[in-house]
Amino acid sequence: MDVKKVAVIGGGTMGNGIAHVFAMNDISVNLIETKQEFADKAVATIEKNLDRMVKKEKIDEAKKSATMDGISIFLDVEEGVKDVDLVVEAVPENFEIKKTVWEKVDKAAPDHAILGSNTSSISITKLAALTSRPEKFIGMHFFNPVPVMKLVEIVRGLQTDDETYEIVKEASEKLNKVPVPVNDAPGFVSNRVLMPMINEAIFCVGEGVATAEHVDEVMKLGMAHPMGPLRLADFIGLDVCLDILNVLYEGFKDPKYRPAPLLVKMVDAGKLGNKTGEGFYTYD
Ligand code: 3HC
View (tube, protein in one colour):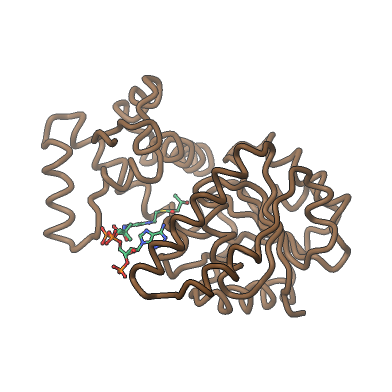
């Protein structure tokens, strides 16, 4: 099956980036949000990121217009998924929210539709079991900023069939991304490797080993990371980092994944990183 039309559910940081890359690669997008103001914000972000690409001469104005025209807004999940080949869900990392969404999608999406979740750590097998078609359910894990990062981590649940995997692999290649298959396990591969590094960096700050700036400088200049782990934690969102560490901690029952006390305190204080204007750094 050729994926010609997708529904992207959620227009937040990840969702607007996912809608952007599908539409820019000539796959029509139904972008589904809960409120018009959130949809407007998502569209404005996509436009801003397309303008950035026009300025860098990566695309021209005609491509920008065609991309914007390829995105239709829906405020109703059932309406938005009824004629698509692929659904990509990018709603908050909360099982109850995802459950409500997937139950609606399962009722309304066509029989042939592939069901993909951009979850960063919730079990794909568990999400698939919310639907009547677990063989068509798969993880399609994108990375922030989606228009820039080349990886799509494709997560196969216990019941995901080979046809579903092949369709999603091909669709990812059409986006000029590199699909990498992994099996379902807490944190998959990406966050199982990334989050302990971020957590350890936070322990270093919390224990007074070095300042956030100095920890980041060590990793940038010594390990050639584009961003230090604490700047990256702010960029991802400290609440998201904490949620993922808790999934690893509970999933493996291994103390090596215990969240750093400083991370817990910062989340409790509402210092969530870029999105709240303050985390390990301050932002305008
Ligand atoms: N849309 C389109 N283009 C964008 C963009 C966006 N949202 N954000 C950045 N860009 C482009 C810029 O235009 C620029 O293009 P150029 O190479 O043609 O000049 C390029 O990306 C680099 O951007 P900048 O020059 O503004 O800044 P930097 O060189 O500092 O790069 C960065 C910014 C790409 C974010 C880089 O710092 C980086 O790669 N950081 C690491 C990001 C990362 O690790 N992401 C994964 C997070 S984990 C995740 O998402 C999974 C989840 O489950 C937690």
